[in-house]
Image (cartoon, rainbow, N blue to C red; front, side, top):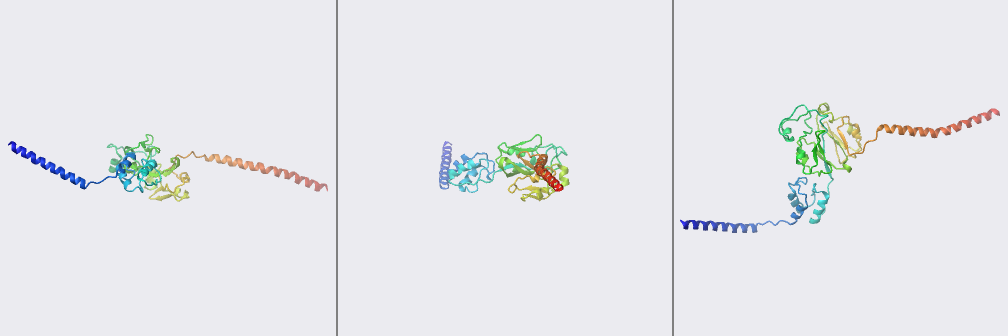
Length: 314
């Protein structure tokens, strides 16, 4: 009996040793050498794994950079991080136009009243998949904060006054996670301008004007006045909805003045001067002209009278 146990142990031990040798040989033969620069690049990345670069995570992005740096850009790290990566890899990086997340829905609680009450799982995805939402607008923001939950930079929060997501432009890295998480697609990455100024249509409702207006007082009704006001062909009207191309918009804001519902928004601009101020200035200018013109006329009149008196005396 003891011999059987000993023999079994020896056989099993021999099999294990043989398997270890085989695995060792295979690992050496088929070993894949990893470029040490991958670790160097990965250490420079913020480690957010936000997916804004188009890769599943920072490690995958580092591997892609080592293979080919052309066209790669880390939205979370920005130009500073990419400059360091370029030093490690010995290449050049061209930064794309900076962008920022914009919530294209102006349907606050004040202008988009609720028509029903939802009682269920508090996620926008479930609400969007089961029914239209608590308001009469089937296109607008649901407001349960799926976008806030996926933001890894703390750039989004729900505004209690409006019930809509609010973007902190300083913290936003334009990774696009919030835009992907929004089932209604009301969040868009738009071109970042100086001092975060922007002009955009805060509505995605494609219903006809009367229907959209009934659901939300701030809805775009597709009247086309903004299209006519734009001198740069930056606004298009499709499916009863206006859209401003941020790459063509010069932010003159003429379109905002023409919008009858307030669907067009202008943000982070200095306050407009009241139109009433222009009238007194014009009146003052016209009055000054009269003052300058009247004295010569007054001087010419006595001269004419003197000539008439001289002729009469003769």
